Length: 131
Length: 106
Image (cartoon, rainbow over all chains, first blue to last red; front, side, top):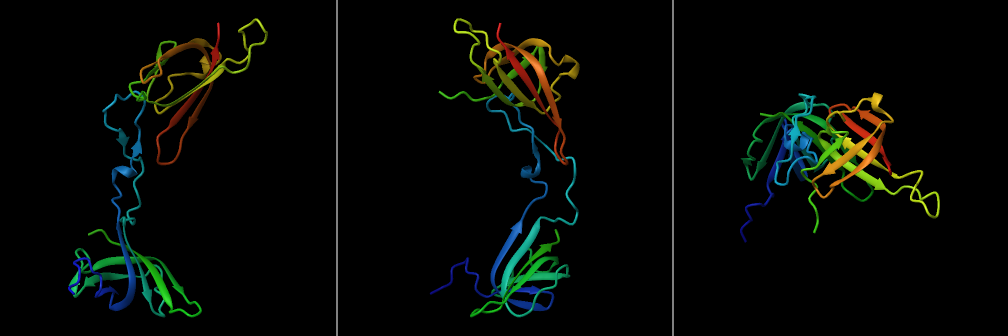
């Protein structure tokens, strides 16, 4: 039986030279300048059919907030150091995921869970540079 | 049929309150003070929130003028006394103004 084109098997996530045995990856892209980040200044005086009025927020987001993160679960004994940096890559079946050949990252958060009758599991969230 | 709340104009004493985003009319207030009277101590309140300055000075507090609403299923008019003005500022947001009127029955 052939694999579906969405099949994630054979996916490898690397932080620098370290490859992780990942069980789940969530990639999130958020545009810091999206309309959802604007102030809705629509009012009752607008007529039916008019466009919703928005204005930019007066303050800009932090330049370090790229709006792009990867959160992944892995099996292993190593806890990933917070604030560590390097380059991140994700390959599926040996082919780099689009935009993930080698992206600079900074670790936002990291946890390692050791529980009875279970494998040692880790979870990390890394912030990606906007390239 | 429901009335889309759009195209609403609000004036108090002829001065337009601009960029109004919220209107609450609570008419009626307390019961009449006498069996054969319609006079009530409290005729109700009207609260209006807007993004633009409410076009009101605190010097007008206590003044009675005609508060008129048109459009958006809110067409009505009443005499109202300007009672309170609240201005609120928040980081990374626009200033917001809330003005309260006391309905006057004549």
